[in-house]
Amino acid sequence: MSARYDAVAFLRGLYNPVPDMTPDDLPPEWRDIYRERAAIREISGGLPRELAEHYALLDTLELMQTWHLYPTY
Image (cartoon, rainbow, N blue to C red; front, side, top):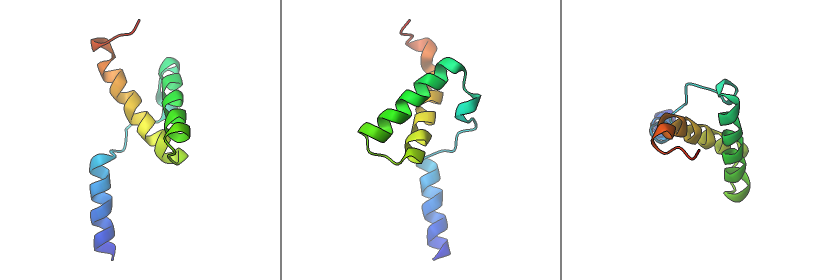
């Protein structure tokens, strides 16, 4: 059973990478974006808070890397 668990954990890691930052490491303006995305995923999307925060952090980090390509202000 443990071998199957390891395989599942490995596959989950491929699709849910562990970010090398925490929300506390984000600049204040990006932290607000993170919180908004987490709330939307949790409330509207019905995800558990931990998962909503995980995906929101991944989204925010991706936005931070590509913001200069499509700035909104």
